[in-house]
Image (cartoon, rainbow, N blue to C red; front, side, top):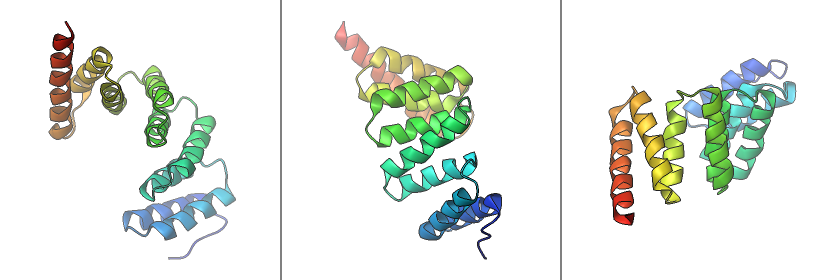
Length: 165
């Protein structure tokens, strides 16, 4: 396969192919080529952000996640991704804001509740974590292991809150 320097969409797709095959360096080159061709391509910023997380470069991931949100500030998927990237950069307060902003734009975005619940749980904000996990459990229809994990965390929240009384 050959990189097509004038077609940002094709380069983004090529990068996705490389990333799926575990060829992260080739994927990075293709994403960079896509963004050189069209720096406003939101999907390429989103994808390269994910790639930088996989490569262990959260600061680079953050730059692209922020650009994606600047380009489409009401897209819940981009806001949720920004929250994930902020967490990987140890910016927990900002991550919480990103998850909450995700839920403003899509109150049924289950993954945002899951990540928010985990973030709040780790910060020992058990009452708020409990609400997030309850919402996730109500909304989640995919793999049961995530619902089971959330239910376990919810039970832990209940135990912690009972112990505080």
